[in-house]
Image (cartoon, rainbow, N blue to C red; front, top):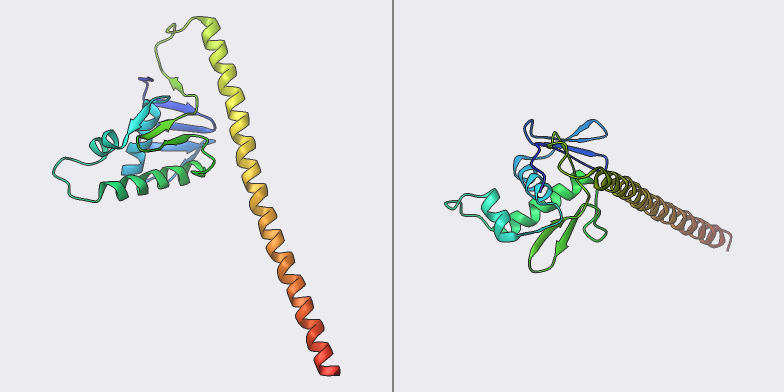
Amino acid sequence: MPTAKLLRFGVFELDMDAERLLRNGRSIRLQPQPFRLLCLLASQAGRVVTRVDIRGALWSSDTFVDFEQGVNFAIKQVREALGEDADHPIYIQTVPKRGYKFVAPIEAIGAQPGQAPPQARTDGALHKLLWTHIAELRLAEERRRKRRRALLIGLSAAIALAVVGALVVLVVRG
């Protein structure tokens, strides 16, 4: 579990002290509860964080809200900030009936040097680099899929207009 207050994953930096999330150096807006949720998940990377744990971290015991809806909303906001889709998770994996798991490799900035042998650090850096490229490819694929869908809708609309136009011409001449 990373103990540093600055965590890097993919193209993101999570600065827990400054309470900000950066993507490629640009600040990403995130409300306080979803930010705390992201900090909780990222600091527990690789482990399942239960909905009960999330409830305890985000709300005090004297708070009366629909926790299930609240957790769902906070997870949705975190995923939107990270630009990911729940059906194709890159950072946060849903563990049905249990909770959530942060699956991206984390680099803890300011962690104690020498914690891992040099080979382990190299392997970890290689793993992070490969994972980052895979994540970027998946995000690019999602953008291409959205563009294709928009193009298909536009093409379908153009064809429909052409058919309607041809029918109008036939009716007017007819």
